[in-house]
Image (cartoon, rainbow, N blue to C red):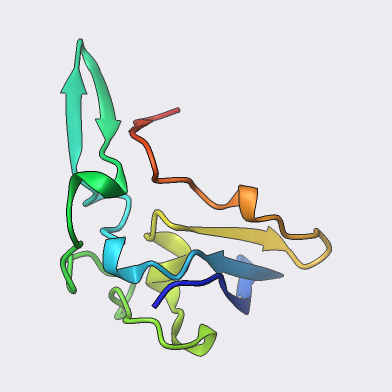
Length: 111
């Protein structure tokens, strides 16, 4: 499934919106996403460099692991804290798709 997914959550005591691009089949979790080193710099790989991420990349937030999204209700703590494809914004801010990470190309780790 693809498409922007949204869920209202309470994050560190604040009401926020959790958004993701809905591409769970490409989500590894930020700690597990494959990396490459080129000329001494480390990069996370782009989506095009692998077919699919594992259904269970082995990372958890509390009891929550990577879900298979079928609706915004399926989003969990893993999505908010571990998924590299999501963003959290305050309810008072307007959402823009540009706020979501773009995995169409490699991204330098730590930038």
